[in-house]
Every structure is written in structure tokens, then in C-alpha cells.
Amino acid sequence: MLRHPVRRGVGLLGAVVVASGVLAACSPNHQGGAESGACAAVIVHDGQLYLGTGGMKRDPATTGRLVDGVVPGCDDSGGQLPTDPDQHVKVEELADVPVSTAVLWQDVVYVRRGAELPVQARTWFRAPKCASSNGFELTADWIGVTSPRRARFDGDLRPPYRLEVHVVNGPRAYVGATIHVRADAATRPGLSPRDVRSSLVHGGQVVARVDCVDGQFHATSLQVPGKR
Image (cartoon, rainbow, N blue to C red; front, side, top):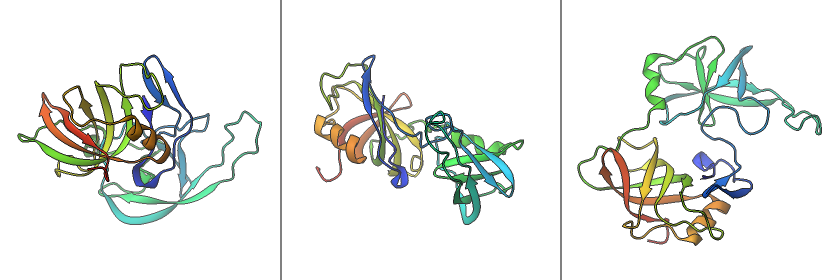
């Protein structure tokens, strides 16, 4: 699977490889859990250790209040390089969740060790099903793409394929959610090799016209903004 972090201005991806017929990329996991290497995703706040969670599918609401946190220095080079210094950061207070339980930083929820998120937070980890009766348009940050076909050249993407995207504009039920949009031979237009290569280098967005098919998001058209 080809992946790149694009939400909220996160940096560009690293090396791209092709394996087992799937486009793949080495990049930080912008949606939680430990990042690449041996360093765990942890933050210290008020002397307490907070652990990063993975698998978030919806943006949690925040209050706008910021508090201090520290990302501990880490050596993920096996001793080949000096340990990174501690990083002082501002973390966000979550709505209806006390800071003593969890905080948000760079789109990842960090939960204090020994604490548990409230039951209502479970929705953050469930992607919405496609449930609109009529077709609709959405604009989304392009996170990744999976295809069963082996790439023949850089940027080669032939249907069927599945885009992983983070919705930034469209029906309210889907904005702020990370979903998968499916494309097939009937998707016109689809994404071109140039679109794929540009996204690898720069990150980017996609505009999709979508129909709901058995709860899944099916693209009738896919375009890159500025080319419409």
C-alpha cells in the first residue's frame, strides 16, 4: 500500500517500494501507535506517561485549550547516533475527556498509563459506513492507495484500487473521518500516473464523486483539485 502523511501539514513520505503487487511506502504513521523504528509513541504531561493509540477513524472534538507536554528523547539508530533531545510540545485538551485521562497531539490520542478512555470515545475508532441515498461529492486528503495489480512503472495505478482518505469537505456525517473509497473500471475519470507521482512527492487532495454501494464508498469519478 502506498501511504503518505498529509493531514494538517504533516511532512512528506520517504522511500517507496513495490512488493507483492501492492504499492507501498515507508512513512510515519500519522494516525497513531508507535512510529517507525524502536521509539514508542509516548508523551509526558504533569509527570505522567501517556501512550499513543492507533486505529483512529474520526477526528475527536477538542476544547481549544493547550497544555504542556514532553516527547522524550529517543535513540532508534541502535546506538549509531546520539539520542534525540526531549521535545517540548503543546498538546490539546479533548472535549469531555479530562487531561488527566488523555490528550491529543498531531492527530493521535495519547492515554495516560493506567487510565481508560470513556465509552463514548469508541466512535473515534469506527469509520462511518456510506449511508447516503443520493450521490455526493467529497474532498479529502489522500493518505494511501491499495491495488491488487503489480505496478509496471512509477505511478502505475490500474483499477480496481482502494483509496484511504481523510475527508475535509462533504456531507457532515463523513467530514473528519478516515474512509476507504473504491474505484473500478467504471470510475471516470480515475487517477493518472501523473496524479500518483505528484502525490508521492507533494502529498495532496482528491475530489471524489461517490455513490453508496452496500455501505461502501464507490467512486464514480476521481480528480485532483486544480485539474477539474
